[in-house]
Image (cartoon, rainbow, N blue to C red; front, side):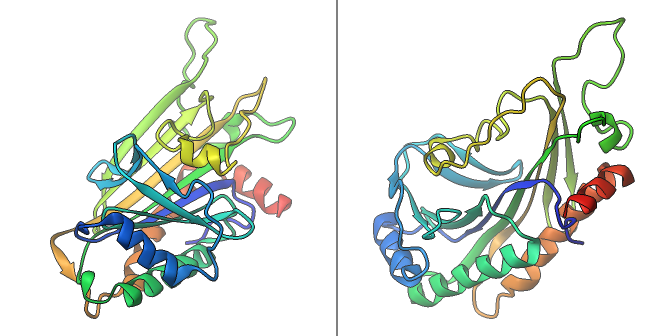
Length: 266
């Protein structure tokens, strides 16, 4: 199920993990050669102390002493990430899930073809979505979430709630899925995503002032143990299957009123 035409998606990250390559810089060179026509702009070409991870707890960017390469599109809104046996694809210009996944599949196909025999197995796939929910004038944030989904919504004797967080961990047929709803966070991007990478891309978002708002952070991963063989591996089916529960959850935790507002704004 797709997001609504004007759903508040602000950032999307997709990652495919291969067995570790012996030389990440050489691997980055292979990737650059494969995608160079479309992703020739290299802002923050090589980022130290930053790593992409896919684990049972989700997909995240963590501070580690690891080389992370990035290649950006000419408009600066789409980026390919490369580190030790991992290729990521992210954007702050999301249109819909089909557009994003088709672009990601194109990158994967070019990388796999260029890498040849150096990539023979797949260890994991993951997707992560970040939504920013800001009520329109005259609305309350609570009108956008189903009961029990908005953190810090209980009454405490007149005390003013400054924010809150709710984390729900699921297990789908494919693998771990995590839903995090954060009310009035200090930064729109979660701490791990609000990294030198996002800041350097100028993708940071101004935190809404003097109003109630929330972010919805959802990620879903499939981890192959043992690793899956690359030959005849169906990336398309797996990625679209990973995406479906993310869209379903988004529609289930938000209200008909919220969805009507987003449809009007489309």
